[in-house]
Image 1 (cartoon, rainbow, N blue to C red):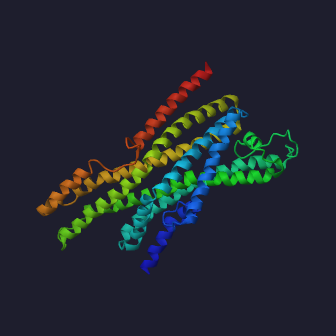
Image 2: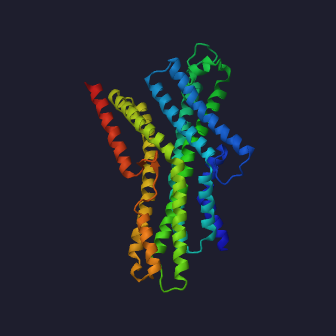
Image 3: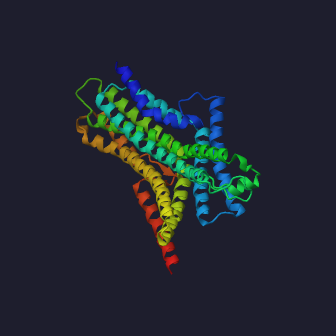
Length: 394
């Protein structure tokens, strides 16, 4: 009965992320074969099209300022999707090891209090990450509804060669340059919608996959802290039990470092891109307010919210991981360490030394991603935005 309950916990914690990432070949617990490679190539190709077509649109010079901003936003998000998918494909062992460890954690746990901690972190991962992906999908649907409504109202005659067609993302000139037939306009719109959904999955789906397992590691560190605090020196086999806790600490450090190394380069690019896009979209929002463009105000707010949410999640979870690692030392200090045997007390000193340099998510291995970094990015972005706002008012 208990075994079935743990299996239900595994399904609860991992099924949504499998649904997001299996279609693009990113699910760590899948069978790695030619089909998984083909799915990964499909995801990378769709994200690459979202880079190529908007770039051609800007190069051909047939877009206005609003469309140029849309092209830049889609291009940047797609670049992140390509980077994440490619890196996770080339270095899959970090995610595989962490997810296999998570499955083993659920299958071997017997303490109901520890299970509750794991379920709480799984719930947070499901709620936050699934919301992030679903909002991204909803945004993609909005982008396809506008040209379909325009077509349904008969505002554009798709049989006219001089007609200006609308597409889910700016690609009209690029498709005309490639001699794409206008007779399959609806099919083209639906194909672009599929491309946008897959491209969103390569970015936000991979974010959800990574952040979910990072939260699980945080939960395991939380459990370890409780075990250190409540360590009982009166029970038998004290040396074996304390050594088991030390080995568990080292194991969790290794898992966290694997995740930090995997995401380090991507986080550096992501922080740079989000900082730039916050300024650009904030500037667009300011202009829309000035000319009372309600549609553009709503669109800018939606995009700004998406980028701020993504930055907030990485910063908050990175801050949580670092604080949990640091508080291992505090947990030991709050235990009855003064009654430990001399041999164990020596090990306590080394653990305290280890917590002085805790594992954390870093951008490029030199910028720690936490709430302080988050506030610095916001302050810098809004400072540049204030300068731009003053320039247009002068």
